[in-house]
Length: 328
Image (cartoon, rainbow, N blue to C red; front, side):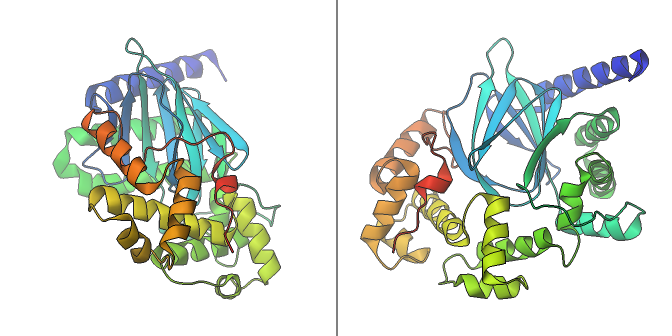
């Protein structure tokens, strides 16, 4: 890279930092007028938290963040961005942040339909079948991608233009990612018939029907794979088996129902598909580290103190995969 391009990239990074610092709220994530765009500001490192990471692009203007998917760690900072191609359960923590230099970052949600349409409309090469890998990757920030992100943030100053221009800029962002060295990760989920695409279909089904009994054979049939092949590819991408994944969805939704809608543990358990309240309590404690009543009380107290949100929970280093062993 020439010295001129290095200087331009440095200026663009400074511009990103200034924009997020100006527009982000004092603490936590800031929902913006652009549905796909969230800004984040933190003035201290965070505890490890577990949540379902949506398909997205994550950028950091200042500070650093560490994400665990299964046993693999992904670290990104002002020089690197994170791409996630599927909904995957992660443990994440902000590792660099202070009052003097707060963590400043953003997330842009990625739409599978936009990816698929761009592959149809453009001349982007179709990737050959490759060994399946995790649905997450870290790459170096580039100037064209950063410039597109800056233009998207600048639209927040033109609310009337957002409905017309934001889809165009978001499409450019997806295009920049597709033609990058990490583009094959996204291209695979945009291709009907591809294994990653088929796993994405199964995940969408699980998200909509998590409370229903499910057989792996049914998901495999939906994905047009054998049971063994489906199970293998699902775990390679998400770090969990299909049944562990469903359990994660159920427990997260039960937690939300208890916290946001003030349901008791038994009602929330049955609402999300559990037939046994004792099994629900046992698996809830295994994932979140405390029984439902104590966990919800702790979260409410933390929320009152301005230190937590609905997604916050502390886990140990074993990770969600090992805490979600399927009870039989």
